[in-house]
Length: 444
Ligand code: MV4
View 1 (spheres, rainbow, N blue to C red):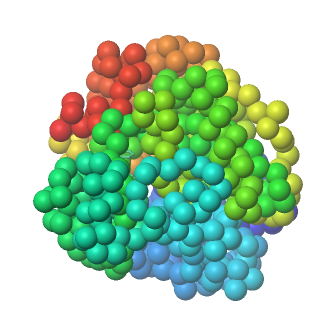
View 2 (cartoon, helix red, strand yellow; view 1 turned 180 degrees about the vertical axis):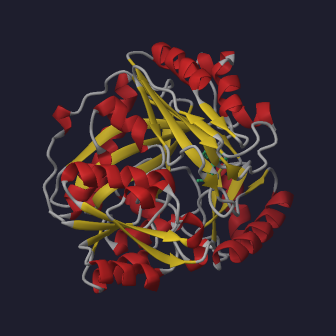
View 3 (cartoon, rainbow, N blue to C red; view 1 turned 45 degrees about the horizontal axis):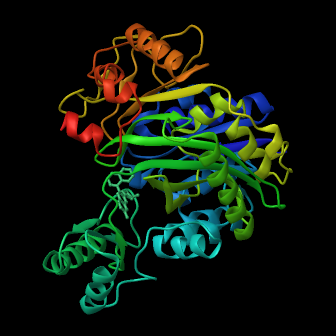
C-alpha cells in the first residue's frame, strides 16, 4: 500500500480523499494556490505545497508544479480528484513517467472515453445499447441529411471532444440541420480545438441515469447500482438520488449486468461511471466518466462501500475485496449540491462565511470544506457543500432532507439551499416523475 499520496485538487473532494487516506494510514500532501492558503484541505493534510497563483491554469492545472510537489515531498501516488486534471490522459502518463502511481484508469482508457465517438464505438462493440446515429464522425452535410432522413427528426449534433452539453445542437428539419452542423462545429472548435461532430436521434424526455462500476483490472468487475442525475440546470447537476425512482429491480439488474460485461471486455481498471439516457423503458449509452464523481457519496450511502478507499486499493494493485453477490442496495440516498450562488438568479456569491452550522442527526452527512471565517474565493467552482441524506425509503430520505436543509446555517453569502427546499416541496419531485428538462422549466 502507498505511504504518501499527493492530492491534486481542492475543496470538498480534496477533503474526501484526505479522509479515506487517513483511515487507511496513508499520509497526505495537499497542493494549493495562493488563494487557498487558508483552505480546509490544506489545514487537514500532513504536508502542503503552494503550487501557484489563484488562476487554476497556473495552479491546479499546472502539471510541472504538481509533479515537483510530489517529488520534493516523496509521494508514492497522485490522486487527481475530479475536474482539473482528473481526465487528462497526458497528465496520467506524465505521473507514471515520473515514477508515481496515478490513482485512476490507464491513460489509454482515459483517452478513449474522452473522445465521445470512440467511447460510443467501444460501448457499442461490447453490446451496450446506444442512441441510433452516425457510425462515427459526420463527414459532409449530404451524409448527415441522408442519415437524419433515415433515423427521423429531431436529431442532435454533438461534438466528439464534448461532454457537458457544449457544442450540442438540435435540428428539427433538413433546413435546420445545415445550420446545426455549422454551429456545433464552430462551438466545438472554440471549446475543444476539435470540430469533429457526430449525429444522434434526439430523445426529448429522457432521464439521466448513470451506473457506478468498480474494476480491479484483474478481471473482477462489480456494479454498485445507478444514480439518477436528471435534476440539473444548464448541464450542472443540482441534486442526485440513488436508487432511481424510475427503475424497478429487473431494469436495474439488466443494465447493471450489461455494464459489468462491457467494462470487463474493455479491460478497464479503477472506478468508472457509464452514463445512459433512459426513456420509455429503454437505456441508451451516451458517455463514460473515468473519474471519481461529485455524486459518489449517494452510492456509498446505499451500498456501505467506501469508493475512494476502493479506488486507492485498486491503484495499489489490490484485488477487489467483494463480489457482486456481496453488494446490496440499502434504502435511499439524496445529495443536494449547495453552491455559493443566489438561489433564483444563480449569480455567484463568493465572500466570507460569517456563521456555519452544518446539520446532523440520523442519516445526515456533509462533505464540505467550510468553517466560520472561511472566505469562499471567486476563482473556482461554486460548490461549497454536499448535503447527503440516507433513509430506509425514499419518503424517509426526503423527510430527513427537508429537516436537514432547515437546520443548515451558512451565513455571509448567498447559497442554493432555498432552491433545494423548493424542489423538495414540489409534487413532481415528490412523485419522482421528473425528467432532465423539469428543473429548467421551473427555475429559468
Ligand atoms: C442527448 C440528449 C437527447 N438525445 N442525446 C447533454 C450533455 C451530454 N453529456 C449529453 N446530453 C444530452 N444528450 C440525445 N441523443 C439530451 C442531453 C441532455 C442532457 C443529458 C443529461 C442530463 C441533462 C441534459 C440536459 C440537456 C440535454
